[in-house]
Image 1: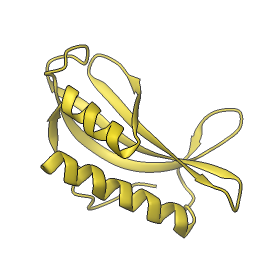
Image 2: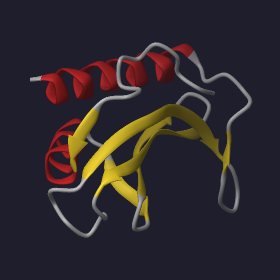
Image 3: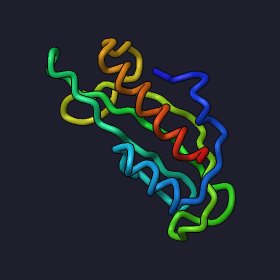
Image 4: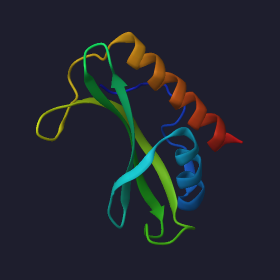
Length: 115
């Protein structure tokens, strides 16, 4: 599921600041390579015993990811349901409590990045 109109798409930040802001909100930089990185936030749905991951895709527009002053651009914000043994399924809608947490975390990250 792709989140539209989050206000995050297209934002630029240096790697060090994005890492700091994302960590404050609960995201971790999980997958990365020299020119792109994803930040993940695990959201548990205890009622249905399911896990969802809110994911933010970024791409380096200046520099490479091993340098803290590399400039990243946020490309997309989306969420997937964890599947066994590993992977994410992006087609189904998440329950409303999960969506509420995701929306709140997106807003928190946006506020930090724009400060």
